[in-house]
Image (cartoon, rainbow, N blue to C red; front, side, top):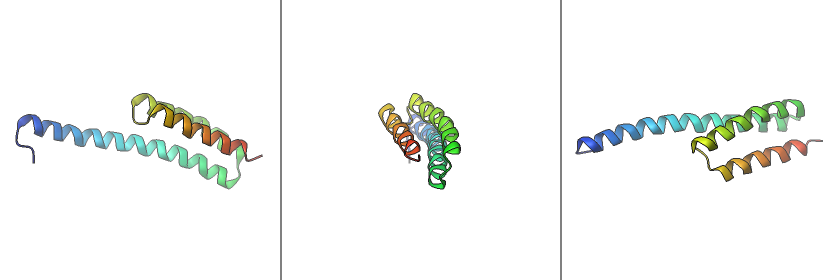
Length: 87
């Protein structure tokens, strides 16, 4: 347990930050999962519309520092390749 006032405050802040970032990561993972489900279902139109929203979420997470920019680009690229392969 934290012994100083500063350490107690940092512990409280860490809990709050973890809660916030966990929610952000969950939103990001759900967006990707929705696109993958549409791809597996074979619904190209739905996959493309879901990709547009997922792209926005992924870029937002990269801008906020939840996700590295290169990782965001890699995820978007792989989703696009999967969608194009549906033809």
